[in-house]
Image (cartoon, rainbow, N blue to C red; front, side, top):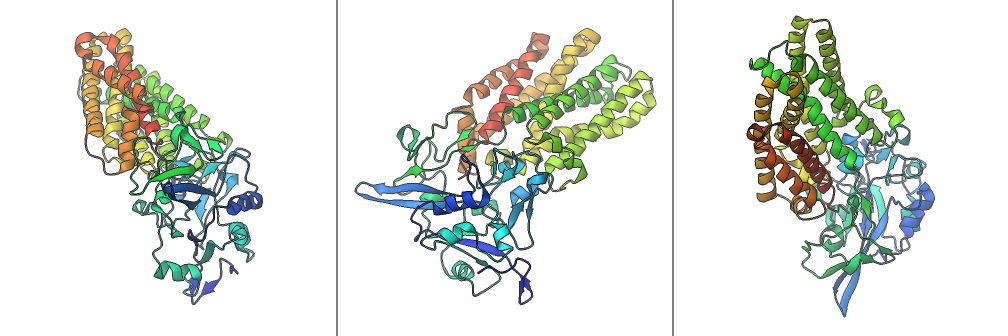
Length: 513
C-alpha cells in the first residue's frame, strides 16, 4: 500500500515510479476504463490507453501491447514550458497539474515527447495522467493498478530498495521511451516490444483501417502512429489499435510568426538604415511608417496569441504569476517592452522630440531583435518536435524579420519617400537569398534524427508541399526585387507566410506515441 508522499524513509523523500510489465499485459483496457471512471475523463480523450501491434507474419504472429500514458519525467519538458506553473512537479516526483490556472496555450502538449497531454473538451484545460495523486495522498494505489487483472502495473518508491519497482529497475532489462530526450522518465517498461515503444516502428494498416476505428490522418492537424514512408522495425509489425492525436498549434501560430516578423522587422530595418546614414532621422518612414506598421502587426500578433488560448480570460496570469523557465513568459514580457518603446516612439514623433528618440534606439534595437528571435527558444522548448531544434533557427528568424520588414516598408515608402524604395528592395532581395540558402541546407543536408527527416519529407513532399514550394517560388521572385520593382514585395511576403505554415505544421506532423 502506498505511503504519504511527504513521508520519508531513512531521511529520503518518497519518489514515485511506475513499472508496466508487458509480459503480463493482456490488452484488456481495464486501466483505460478505470482511469476514465476515477478521473471523470470525457469521451474522445484518454489519460491512458493500450496500443496494439501485431508482430510477425501469418501463421507466426503474436500481438504486442503497450500501455501509453504520462512518463512522470524527472526533468519534465511540460513543466518548463508551462507559463503559469499549471503543470508542476510535486516533492514526491509526481508531475501534476492545476486546471484553475491553465490558460490553454498548449505549450505543454508541444513540449511532451510522449504525446501524453491533451485539452479536456469540457473544461478546456490541459490534463494527463497524474498518478492518481489524490489517491496516493490518502494511501491508496492509482485506479489502474487496482483494477489490472494480471498485476501488470506496479508502483513503488525509487528510494525504497525493497519495492518491486526499485528491484526491477535495478536488476532487470527495463526500458523507457525516447531516452534521447533526456527527460529521465519514471515510467519503466518490462518486456515491451520495440514495435510498440517506437511510434514509427510499425506500419499502418492498409487504408488506415485500425481495429474499431478508421484513422485516415489526412487532415493537417491529425497525427497517426506509423508513417507511410518509414518502417524501421527489424520484425514485421503492423499497427492494430492506436489513438489518433491532434497537433497542438494550428494556423494561428503559423500566422503569428509572420505578423511578429513584420512587427519586429519594420522598426529594425528602419533603425538600421538611420544608423547607416541611408535614412534621415526626420524621415516620415522612421518617424511614422515604421513604428505604426510595427505597432499594428504587434497588435495582430497579440490577437493571434490570445485567440489560440482555450482560456484567453486568464492571459493575465502570464504577468501576475509567471513561470520564468517558460519562453512564452519571456516572450510576453519582451513583446510588452517592445510595444512600449514603439508607443513612446510615436509619442516623440508627435511632439518632435528627436533627442528622446535617439535614447529610445538603445532600447528599441535589442527589443526588436529579441522580438524576432525569442520564438526560436520557444520552439526549442517543444522538445517533442525535432524539426524545431535547429541551432540556426534564431538566425533564420532574424533574416525573416529583415525580409518582412523591408518588403512592408518598401510598400509604404512608395507613397511617402520614393527614394528609399530601392535600398529597401535590396534588403528584401538579400534577405530572400539568405533565407533560400537556409531552406536549401535545411532540406538537403543529413538529419540527426528520423523525426527531423520525416518532418522535412512532410514539408517538401507530403501534406505541406504546396505551401513549401509556393514559398520557394515566391522568395525566388523576391530575389529580383531591385530589378523588377515594387510589385514583387507582396509575393515575397505571401511566400514567407506559406513557408511559416509549412514549417510550423510539418514540425508537429510526426507521431510521438
